Length: 270
Length: 167
Image (cartoon, rainbow over all chains, first blue to last red; front, side):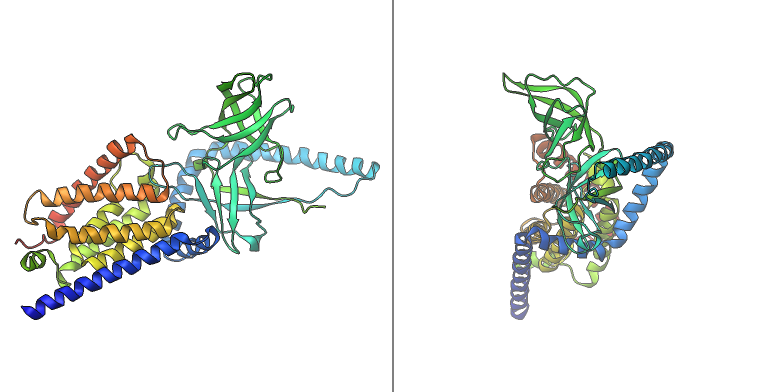
């Protein structure tokens, strides 16, 4: 009995020591920089969790495709029409630039990425990860969008992975303007987690933005290309007397609708 | 006390079936995660697996399971990876030690232990990944998730795993 008691006590000490080591290791991982944690996260998702993520992506793609087949066909036809117009505009633009003796337009480009949402329990999709990194030409920070509108922003990149925030993330901000440029402001995510929407802040007090007005990225700051749809104004949210107005904005894109998106590679500076 | 400790410890041979059940719970959690976390009222299979680990495995091993599950959960959520691993390891270790303080043969032991344990683990996860907490989350969603998980764990315990020996 005595030896059994000693053995039990020894095992308890080992259990406690193991737990202390695990807690310390976990805490140290928590103290790593976002870039270092991204490397770790990418490694785990590419190895242990790879089969799980493949299964989830297959289910998600199947559900999304079956639900959006008709819409996708319409979008394809619409894109084909837009492409024809864009080619005409491009050649016309080149002719005009030659007449005015302007240099070539600075070359920006887009990188197509598949977004893997990182949903937390009880919350909306706020962060995502991609299997594309600096090796694919991504340079954080960079805007992420689809043909329908703005999705979010890539915040950090390693060689083969990137991590970003959807517009639903509390830290997300984007500068927007109306199509005619009469009003501008800053978009942030709304405060109600049950009804994800955007809030336009800093709009001029004297200018009314009617419901249904589409807001576009202004391009200020160089994070997002100008002219990307962000959302549609729904109603006035709050009025700072004599100073500014806030509006509720219906987002152009909801995170759960996005599987593949484009990341903007801004043109190199002069 | 030594008798009581022996009464709830499980020999390696007897831990095989519970280990398989814990594995099935964890795999099911990660495969069905997008479905489960999207619903406000759903069982928390991860917490269920960790509570079963606390019930059937040695505290150090259970803490290891908690740490591993926390790291994987953090990698899935893209938030709180190290913190989740540390929190789960600590809570599961404490749960495994706490089981020795209670009268394991009582019919109320398993449901009460599981309900409280799942609630605590669920809330710890929300805090670790930075989900904003509100009263609905604390007093409605978490208890309902704990209740659903408790039903699942109790049924599994009755059907598939040996109960701890009585004192």
